[in-house]
Length: 207
Image 1 (cartoon, rainbow, N blue to C red):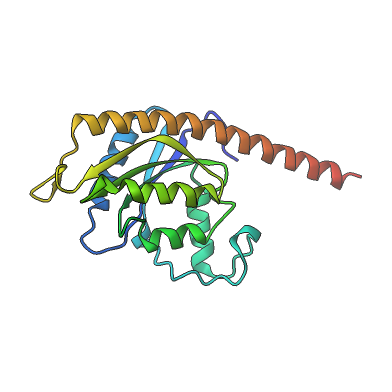
Image 2: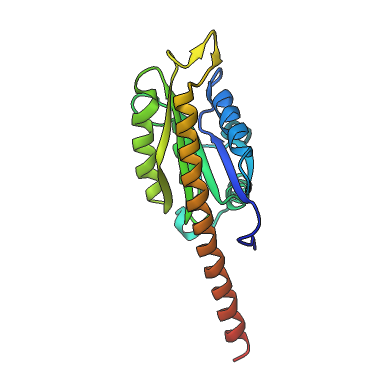
């Protein structure tokens, strides 16, 4: 069980598996910036590395009865993190199907954790995708922070290289401030709840 003194485990999730995606470069920028924060241990989680099929679990994720090895592996990956930064493009005014599918596989592993969003797109910087993503994550009890970063593939990419402006750096700083505060508070809540459950189990076993 993690303690409130241990570093907050933050996953930067690359939400697109599309060949040639900018998400990897965006995630690299986010992860490098976040890693400079005290009290945060940052990793990049790329959906392309997990090879999840279209949702194939016969029981709802809410029940937590996973039958397939790819699901249990994905559950272990998500369970060990306290907070997330979702890096997502905007496809047809929404998020990539691969990201929605990855979220749908799990429930408890997402719940009572914090999330922030860094989006990118040619139009509106991916902001409409984030609006959809907020509602999806609300259903799995993820607490989303208000601050977000919306990158333009027209204005913030130069000759194929991502070049965020100082304004975007400031927004990422605000996002991380909120994410670490909320992530730490929610980890404390989960730790207290787990301790209470263990105490109740021990009490029941001695009766």
